[in-house]
Amino acid sequence: MAGKGSPKGVKQGGRKKGTPNKLTKTLKDMILGALDDAGGQAYLTKQAKENPNAFLALAGKVLPLQIQGDKENPLRTITEVRETIVDPGHPSSEGSEASAGTGQV
Image: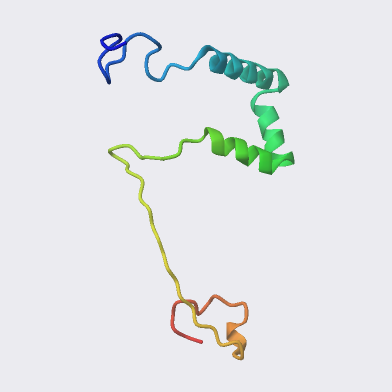
């Protein structure tokens, strides 16, 4: 049936881009309602202490994948590579970081 429909790449009708479907919105509203009934932020704080693995998994799902600063305060990344030579026979090198990075052993 050639000639029917819209040209390729032209969208007609349907939801606007980014609009969640009804089921997703309903489910999200139910989860937020249950959280509110359970105590809201106080409940989440309790769960963070009692079930840190589950809480951190939840936090990982809701935090943005990329974090950016604003134009006046951009985020800066600092990377440091440190190499420390340790002589296991020298008493001052056992468990001490006082000479780290100074070249002393």
